[in-house]
Image (cartoon, helix red, strand yellow):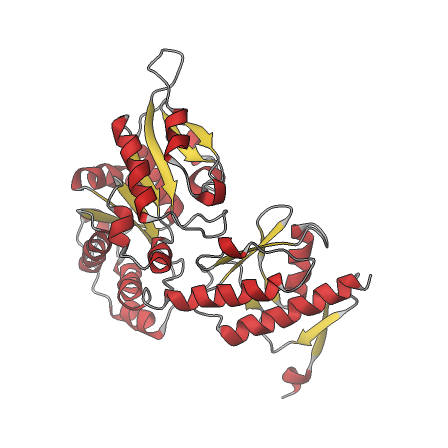
Length: 370
């Protein structure tokens, strides 16, 4: 076909010109949110039994909420359009204005949710730094202050597992329990941003219930790694979920015939969790290949799930490198000025990883000749 033979220049610069066939699709490693619904999801969505969920009448949403709660060992669950909304509803349900929340400095709920903690809940974050994204009990103990009119009362500890900006690192079951025990001793609730909790469970070889058991509430995404087109679940006690439902309404998250969304989520929970180790293997394949391309740097010990952080600063700042990658046909995100983030998922197989590595290898070689 003529279109398959068409060539187009995608950019030029220190690496010369890079061209690829117009028929080739980019290898999209920006996030595991870019996946397309599976055929089973599309069928389930088309055939979903629906009702008005604001009135609590959507049977497919009800089934999803029951299944989600069971998956993480909680009494109840609530469907949200996004993980950010679910996290912010959890903050509203756990805290009062003027209180303090303990949170890791790179945590998504603080770093990447548009300041919602301050704007919506009126809470003050108290930051701590966790090496590798894994907090230590002593870190939490050190933050706790005596009751004093000069200090905001501390009401909540937020944890993240896997930890996105640390590179998809995993907080082990024992550490989750230790951190929650510290919070309990000081009267704090514990919320888990478990957007990729099933990745964490797969990496540890445990059930997700074990990771969620010590916390008061847990959020996980259906659209990260599990392939659903939309949706996140907030899980906890029935009393907590009742408060979260009101918070969801406040945030504009009440949906009507949401069974068409929930149907895909049910397929995700039933069919997509068991395949997550494949994504982890592809992340390791990618990381190992990148580590063999000096001056790129990858901390292989930090590659525990489906996220790979690559330090490209010896070549150029990460935002510029990510743009060059995009021009050559590999989509990734700059995590900061030094690192580019790659995320593996069901829509890029091992052959796709090898193609991405070949493209990156060519770019690095071109840079070395400058």
